[in-house]
Length: 114
Image (cartoon, rainbow, N blue to C red; front, side, top):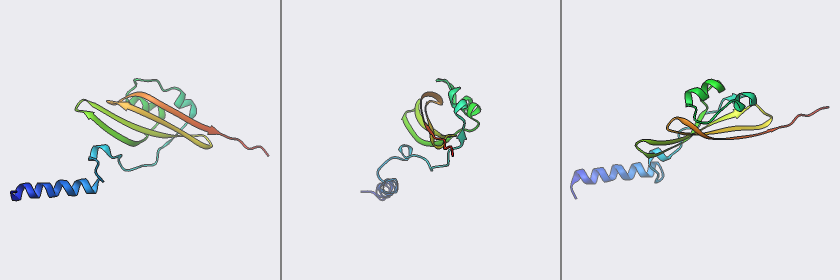
């Protein structure tokens, strides 16, 4: 085996070990804290809006949690937002090529009267 091929295989092996066998594009990016959005703002969202339009409606672009590159012209990514509800609220948006094609809204709102 040539020295160049051996060096290339060593680099590839090190890269695979560093990402635990997954290619870099399959790994979720570093986590950031999702911003907090209101329930009325979430209710205004409609499918097939661009990320810029969604970010304008909600006030922030959310936290990127996963990226999947299926082909050169097909990219899927997921963003999350914290819904302003107590104790729990989460909005998850599924974007295909930068357009919103699915969303999951989950929240639990409790109030305590004393």
